[in-house]
Image 1: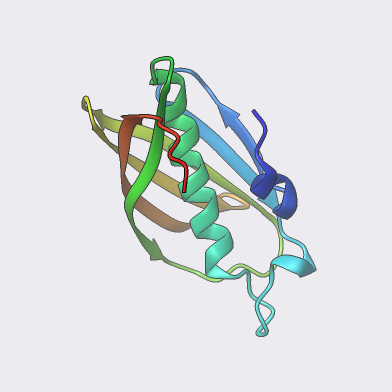
Image 2 (image 1 turned 60 degrees about the vertical axis):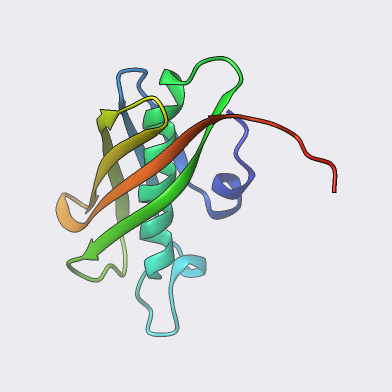
Length: 127
């Protein structure tokens, strides 16, 4: 899958075709905030991308998905290491799906997220 944002930050995406996915990223200087801690948006991006990757294989031809909302809890700061996000589709309806992501760094729990995604047929509108 072509994913320019993931390429930009160095995020690895592994969808599993069974309603799950794994995403990972190695902590680097460019991912840190001014306090030398991984920026929360990096962890959020892992969860958001993992949710889309877990849902995407279940979409029919012509369908796409988009984030409606995500709630995330951060448990501990990260300064170095390898961050991994494991995502599972909890419920997939016709037009909305719910997913959960659990984020670890070097085996320690650092965040959990829950999100809802819209499922719809893509249309192109000229502006």
